[in-house]
Image (cartoon, rainbow, N blue to C red):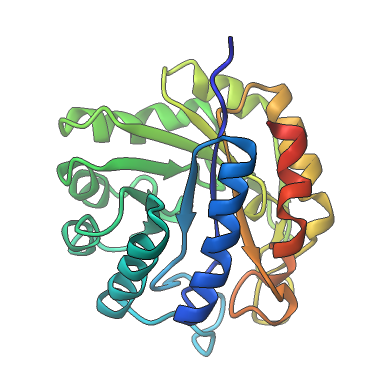
Length: 252
């Protein structure tokens, strides 16, 4: 019998404590309704925004405080992305999974620092790598003494402000023996395609998820927000909070 899928869900950025509580409550409720593992995700710093003027988040220290409050209130496991090696140990005090951004998935020191925390390390596949190429970033984590690896597919970039998803990457990465997650929201991005910020089209998120299921995905990553069109980051790609259960239902 196939194991139940896991879901990584939450807003792109920690905009406010109130937003985190609102979204986490919905995530916890969906996990209970469908009886599936859910992990709450939010970023303390979006260090790779298109424009220097874009909002980035509250920073590491404040972000840890905000997410600890979420954990205390809802009991959810947590994840966030780290961008520099020094952030790993401190983030591991609160977060259960450390996410390595796609652009940084070959940064050896970052992978080693994440591995050394003993936490699960979710390595997102770079937009410029194939699924088969992800053996080597995963191996950096394993060779550092940590076999708790998740690999995440999020599409490939060929220029011209767009991404394409080759779902064979899921099959190829599963061959390494690690859980493979489909990032259903970042895969519909149009990077830098909205005048100094990233565009996209959330219409295709449910289709990305169902296609990934057909290729054997073990989990699904989706960013969600009560008002995506006014979110600080990645609004065009995020699932509307009230649509979350509708999108999850065919996957469970």
